[in-house]
Length: 319
Image (cartoon, rainbow, N blue to C red; front, top):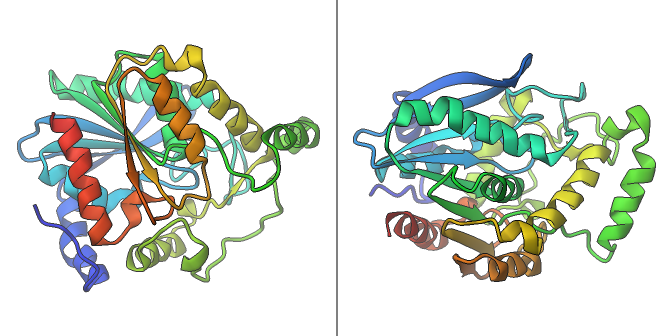
């Protein structure tokens, strides 16, 4: 296994990892609803043992997961990554390029299912299908394995958004405020005014624990406006609060029939670890893997944390 370390990180990504991925990448669009195109990328392994479908986080894109996909391919997994609507190269409901909007979280899960049923499965034959889902994508992933219990054989939820953190403000206050504020066309307005992408890097206030990885992706975002989403709409805020409550409920978690690995970041200030603990306690077969001392994005940590993290993920999939 070839691990990418912090030494000469950018050069290694540009000279080794990016060409490796480009040689194995195919791009396409899936369309669950006519006129609403969903961008995806497919990466083929040399001798695949299974297929991993990536469900990315809020304001992200499959483009953020190059290093992660590199490891998945080395371990023998074909990889599909979908840009959720409102993100990357997929369709958007909001004309502001910096704002993520949705009408309901169920659409995210239905989009994911459509990709798996109409693109992934026909191309993958009898290979087992696994889900790798981060943050917002973890909420979407939880919704998907609850609503469609036979879609995947196993699921990895990494820092899943099962409860949002708004500091000292109670969740019901946030939901009520978004409901009142987001009336009519205003529901697609950003929760806070946003007119541009902040081009100055701000690692200290980011969700990452690895400076070189943060800076590498920040440069990518500077070069591509489609990667510059950075704010939720009022509508997204309201529906995300509701979605978190639904997916961790007793009746929803009871529908999960597959093994789940839930990876938790010890210093997470974006999502609530207590909500993850509750979810894990309600799922019949859920292993909780805690990583102390790191921020939200576990796949964006330095090697001493990152390598054991990926070893845990792969051992779970291979068991």
